Amino acid sequence: MSITTYTTLRQQLKRFTRRTDIDDVFDTMIELVENDIYAGKSPLRVMELVATATDDCALSDRTIPLPASYLEMIKVEIKNTFTSTDIIEMKSISIDEMPSTVSSGKPYQYAVRDNKLLLDALPDTNYWLDFTYFKRLPKLTEAAPTNDILTYYPRLYFYGLQAAIYDYAGEIELAREKTMLFQADIAGANHKFKTGSFGPSLKMAGSSFAGGMRWPR
Image (cartoon, rainbow, N blue to C red; front, top):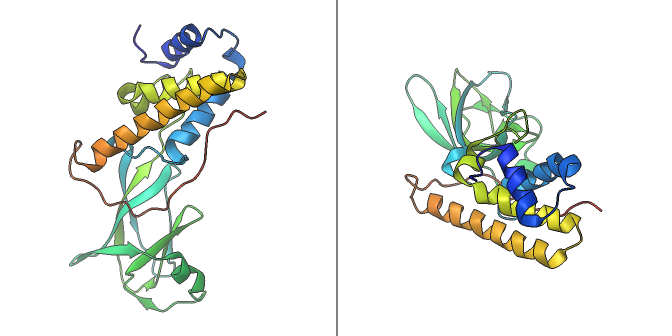
């Protein structure tokens, strides 16, 4: 049986782990695995997670809200009718030391804070921003039974959830084994993307993430 939906994924996991007592904790396990997929120690960064957005810059505000699905920035361009310029990410020390009041002008740097894009200057004319970023997909659920990760990278859910199930059952060595397979598959997918198997390699400008998948005791 192919793993193509929430239901077939759960059925195959019960079969492979010989655990039939996971129904009431399955959604929580998915949430833990998805957190590790998107924001773990080595998060998944592939073409299926790339998104774009455009927003206007207000003359009186140097902050721009980011989409709720935002994970990590790839590229930001500031534009007006005549020009288009890449702006660069501020180093953390720059944003921490920046005064609360800044001068007007054309922004050349940005930082991401509290799910907002923060510019280094108050825009002095009508600009807009085009940004490319990695997004989080909607959670896999019984009501939303598939997504691009399950479609194109089903082993991530399969190995990640096996690790969660074995950890829940106290089978620590099996949990470690499946976690290693899960992490290796993420690394392989990221390598294909970065080396151009899905098009030109993208330079990532976002922050790094840390985390790990463990079943709460």
